[in-house]
Length: 397
Image (cartoon, rainbow, N blue to C red; front, side, top):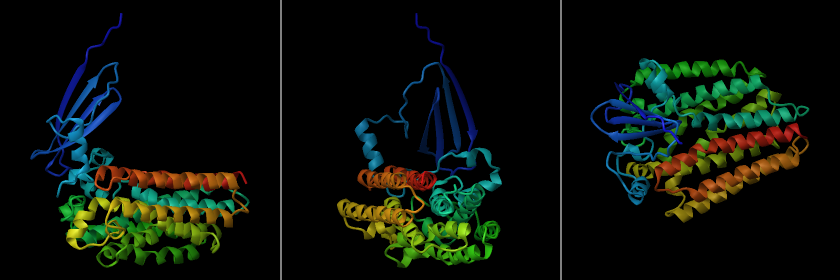
């Protein structure tokens, strides 16, 4: 006879001082399944329900106390509400809220430590270039210590870039639903505090830079990127394609990896690798930028989400063209590096990454911020596929 164990319910209530006053978090745990929900309220109370049994039951996520049918729920997610941050990029509980001291939380959020996708997008070109350069040296695997330095540098400089961005945009961020709760826009960090934090970040970045092999050569390449980092936040005010400038900036690691490995530059390989990163960035950041297109249009800011066409079909045609150009540049890298990259492994890997880009574009719903954010975050898998393709191509050559 089947016997069921009694269901146990535990209720905890505790204040959440780290979240904005209008957020309430509810966590529902059934076996190993956890669901989070947010609702607008005037209190700062977190409620945790833990139900323990031998059964793992399917649980639907919820965002309000009133029940909705499937059509209503899908429609509410698809159509963004004006000035409703819950429709695009809402505050969520992360390890920053749970484990960090209260005084450090605003700085962690300022550096986007709780959102690692930006760090991955910055570090992958470094890893690609390092793997390529290592493969050219008697088919060696990438130096783990060098990759570690690039990882620390990516975390630091991505954080510095976010701090610079928020310093420039603090007044604009207050008017955009997705960004109005950022530390500077929300008043959790003052301008002077942010500048001091930026100085500390740049100091750590300098320490990483002077620790790289071929120090003087790498120092020249590294410092050349600083004006780009400082200027990018301003480009949305006067450039119709600010995402292009972001691509030029965030993929600078494609130069750095080869420079740190060889102390020189291969101009038949690295420019194509760098260019592929730029067009890849145009794809994923245009998808991401559709979350802010209504606010950008009202504020007179530029974006490829506004510049690439008046309807979804035109937008996706442009993005498919950019994805194809990205793939062609990946293939050009493989062709010019054919002396030390095994053909089937590398080409199969980059083609799989291209297929992932096609999937992102095809399934993107430009009116659903949750859909767009998920596809943006999935680009870490694209970077990993390219890195794996290069590493496998070099190892099996």
